Image (cartoon, rainbow, N blue to C red; front, side):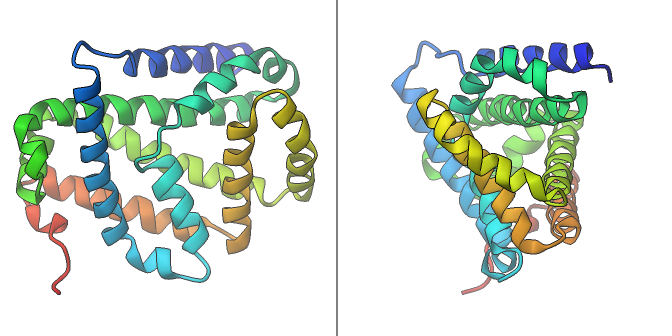
Length: 237
């Protein structure tokens, strides 16, 4: 991918992310339903990856993934801040780095779109959401290719973050950027980048972690689409 193509892709994903968050007529009701849905989904992720969250080696990376990349946290503020610094990024970052940022924004937009489809399919059942209702809605909306793409993006982002930790100057550069980022009103984006870098650096090699998370999420997605709801069942008390 050329530099110009990477920039064009990033702009397109930023536009998509904004469209995915355009308020609907329901307003506050939609917001409450979205929060309830994402809370249930976050609890499922925490159950599935409980061993990673408790691991000394993988714990920080698991927390970052489940809260910042694949969880309930709204990262739209990062998209807005990326747009603000797009001219600087286009002058200073290589195409590979810009493409990685585009992956993160695409993941955000795609997750928002899929969640909105799930919430619509669930209807009033979202107030008493359980594994059976979730699985039924998951199959009802289909969009199998987009589900696969979502997990591919998670995997690619994990490998990209792991790759950054092999360059010692990246950590120093992030620390140097902290004050200018605060002054420029980019503190949220700066914090996101620092947390991701620090979480993956602790592992001293994150390929095993990425393989585990992506493998589990693919297995769950495939099982749900095949009609096996047992993959969502909480562990016995």
